[in-house]
Image (cartoon, rainbow, N blue to C red; front, side, top):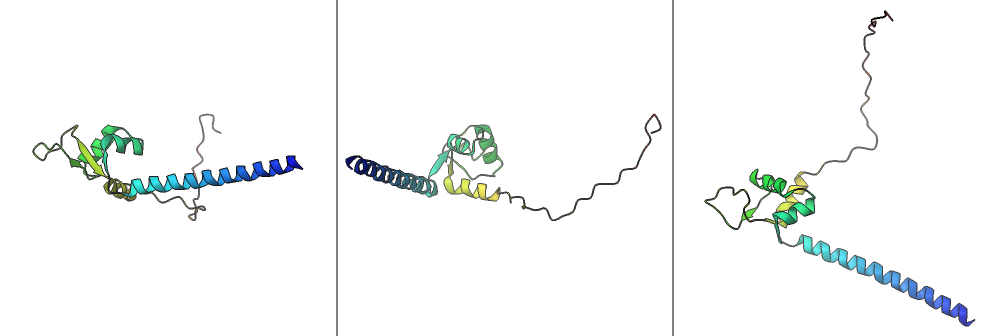
Length: 126
């Protein structure tokens, strides 16, 4: 009798721990979302790490004006190869939203017919 109460108690405690962990995960997810949604400034390195691309690609995106950036050490309003750029989170999100790709449909509706190839005899005449 004592043993069964002990087991039930442990099961209840395990469920409480699981619920607590789930709540903590939700809390940290909300915290991360709030951090990303704020108007924070990112460095070139942070953008590169987040997008999993090289810093040189981020610099190229800035140079091509695909991502809005601010050079905190301007040099006569021209692009400085490795300047100290800052990108607003909002600018990065805008860039990513412009680059979204529509997923492929589940079923392809167009019918693709194979081309009828001419039958050409090979060197053996077959």
